[in-house]
Length: 305
Length: 257
Ligand SMILES: Cc1cc2nc3c(=O)[nH]c(=O)nc-3n(C[C@H](O)[C@H](O)[C@H](O)COP(=O)(O)OP(=O)(O)OC[C@H]3O[C@@H](n4cnc5c(N)ncnc54)[C@H](O)[C@@H]3O)c2cc1C
Ligand SMILES: Cc1cc2nc3c(=O)[nH]c(=O)nc-3n(C[C@H](O)[C@H](O)[C@H](O)COP(=O)(O)O)c2cc1C
Ligand code: FES
Image (cartoon, rainbow over all chains, first blue to last red; front, side, top):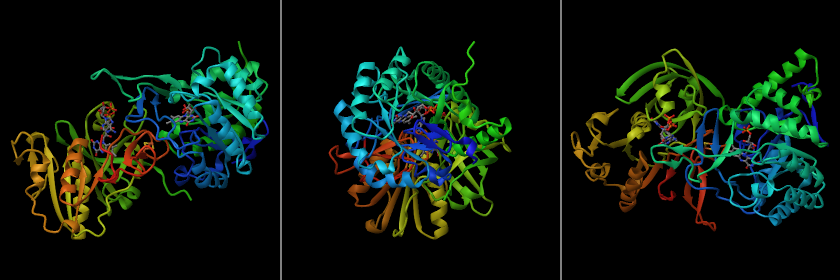
């Protein structure tokens, strides 16, 4: 891998723009059996909460054309278990450590950030998940309200010096308003996008395929929505954007960066091909060489009609 | 160190076992060389987005080939059944934890439906190890009976072949003299495995079950495939990954739905 893939998300330097998206890589251990995680720009942990969570019961995945719905419901071992058992592994992988923080209430996020701040030497950024569609309270409810986003971001800002990346939901009318609220609250970056809320129905039983009824749509099908949101936000934001949604090859990475992303996250495509980041990294290297450029030069170079 | 790979596996044989089930042979020395009974592969199924999981039904370690049996139930399995020999497909495997026969002189393999495929692999492995194996399989009717071998105890709900009744009726005919040295390995539909685990518990025989859940990755990274197991924590249960901690579990650990 060459230095041409170097990017910065604010103060965070990444050796590649490619980050594994939260919830699609657990804490990296399983994927380290497939490739050397050191090629990655970063790894975003599974969404963590203060207490362990069992997540939702029953069927949690519904396949769709070019993607899938999931309703995992933030199953995770709890932040304390994570700190004891997984954080060192992530740190030693050589990829930047992004810790994905979830919660049900304002206080949950405060507790989480206070706890994680004690381990800041091992963490490169906190990704504040204000966007999970699969839990009843918190997350997406806060993430749809610009005032709440601003309030929670500024509160968390006062608790830590760690870079705060606010991960936003696409399930809103005006993504610019929620992104600007994060910026005003003191976010270092926004991550766009989490999953789109959806439903699939088994026509024989007339019941939703997912036991949770609804789930979050991800995969190649959602890419145009994510690209549009990155491009829109890039017109109004001063802070960097991390693009996410439907990436499956190097051209998708390039497209996100042209739209305005400083780095990208890849999720669902890795569920189908776990070692896909190896191929994408090689292809990006070659793209930079062929086009004689540094990948970061692409960010926000969209030429609108 | 990276030790796992996604393989391109070549289809080398295909036969129809009954109207809606086919038996496919693939070339992949890495999978054939290391797979143990109870493990599965996750393979691309044509145009559908996600891979599909199938239990390994047999391996030929010398030739570097393995088999899976596929029952057509939807779009993915339909497309797999139309694969032509010579074509290559993406495959992850071997995945999950297989059966641990260690310490048991007698093994009863039991189940039905597509469970007969992993049972077949277990049977081949155990007989080559010289263990005492009994197989007891249950089907709906004679037309569903596949991969049956001489000596197997066979039951059908319809009674048009074998013993009439469920697989339990078949298990009841067995003469078990050494419960603590006997292991039951069970693969089949959930209600069948639940009934067998109750039967095994009454007889004080250890029972391993191979659970099924809808999967996305098969590699332990998405948490879509969870199975409920008993736990001392506040919820009284814990969701664990079928593809990683399973698919084989001790039946006493499973919280049956
Ligand atoms: C560990 C494991 C081992 C398996 N081994 C075998 C095997 O050896 N042979 C075999 O034929 N099948 C096996 N299956 C089931 C097989 O994976 C599914 O039948 C297949 O994925 C269905 O794909 P489809 O596209 O045809 O069906 P879809 O169109 O996706 O679904 C059609 C219907 O099939 C059922 N179904 C779908 N996925 C699953 C699933 N994962 N488990 C149970 N039911 C499902 C549902 O009722 C659904 O409505 C196994 C599943 C698991 C998890
Ligand atoms: C199975 C699954 C679990 C996810 N869990 C989380 C999570 O815990 N926290 C989070 O912020 N996003 C989670 N996501 C969303 C992804 O990180 C990502 O934002 C989204 O899937 C879009 O990207 P993709 O199309 O590349 O997957 C999850 C997605 C999937 C498919
Ligand atoms: S299917 Fe993804 S964790 Fe099991």
